[in-house]
Image (tube, rainbow, N blue to C red; front, top):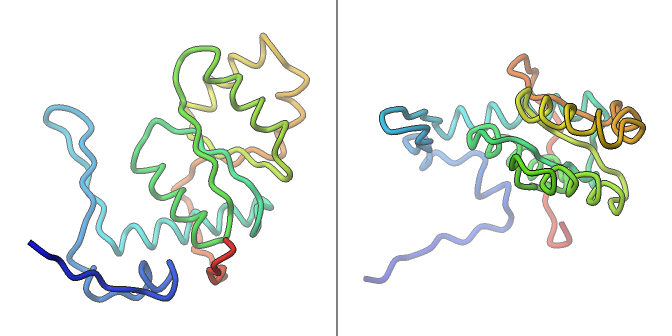
Length: 165
């Protein structure tokens, strides 16, 4: 079976202002009998809101944002917010092993303008780990940590995508 694919000039056109996606949704399976649904409209609204939260905390186009969350819904929203804002998303596995947490510090040290985005659960695990292994580094990055929030004001500025992004 041959399917026809629609071509778009850029990622923003493919995601935003798409009346053909109004009925579409993402279903996140959380357990055997638990699902969470996110419509296209809800996704765009949440991503714009989180982008506003990012920019309020100083994250701007070209900055690198380490993403630390076990929650797939939060991850998808954060990833799309990065795309809309021209922010370089750097997802790292959250894991419970010390090596997973050390990857954050190692990645941070080679990045040019890093920020860390995490939900409360992930941030708590990281704080506990670095309090015992590298307190000075952890304290030094505090101004660059952006926590998950649902108290958002959507961003009015969306970075137009270019082939160099």
